[in-house]
Image (spheres, rainbow, N blue to C red):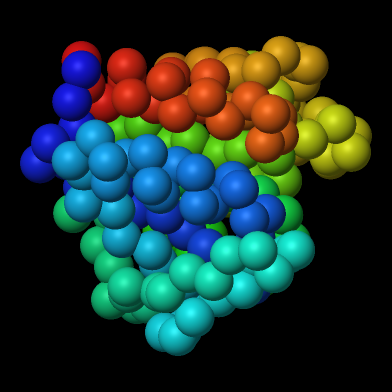
Length: 173
């Protein structure tokens, strides 16, 4: 399996969960993919625990969902911040509607809920967002990875190997 030549967008905001951004970023770049970090503004973003500092490649207004083969939404405080931006929410909704793989981990599904795409979907995420996800109409499971259509969701950093492998299989097929 290879992602050589594939383009992956990673939506990132301040105080993202360090490993949930850094590990997939390194993994998919190591697989030959072009991974671009997209945020509300340019600059460097610090992780929640200050273990990672990641440079933004494009602003949300410079990014086109059609230019990417997959989308990754790490957790931490980032999704709660990003869901306040209508352009980010619109990007997520457009990406989902394209049918291409959309992968979210931990608190990442909060952004999916804001985009209104969870009704009737099977998902997982960090256990503390379960009630919010149920209110958004999702079916919530406590499993390392849940795949429903083009949605790939995962719980937390300890599930990153399963998360990366699932997305890799999806975009390599």
